[in-house]
Length: 103
Image 1 (tube, rainbow, N blue to C red):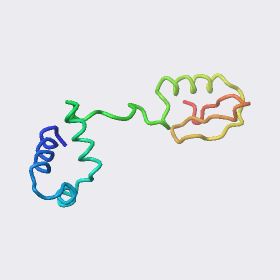
Image 2: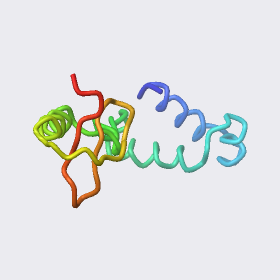
Image 3: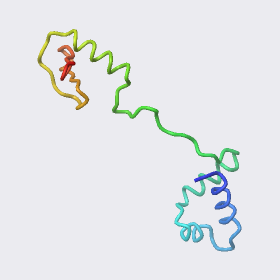
């Protein structure tokens, strides 16, 4: 939702003579969201913030994948456990790393 739309909703809710809770219920807007917007508006930062990480927590970076595959291709140990379906496998910590479907 844009900053302008949020500002309009805040103005609408504060301008009504009905209780805030009732207006928010009719708009189907959670009170926590409204009050978070209101607080951010008073702080002068109502615009959306980009959240989260650029890489999901359970995905390795391309550099890590390259390093793993390089080590796996150099290894001669064949006991591995498949970790993902991306074509690489990681062995038990006491064993070396092996590539699955080496190309």
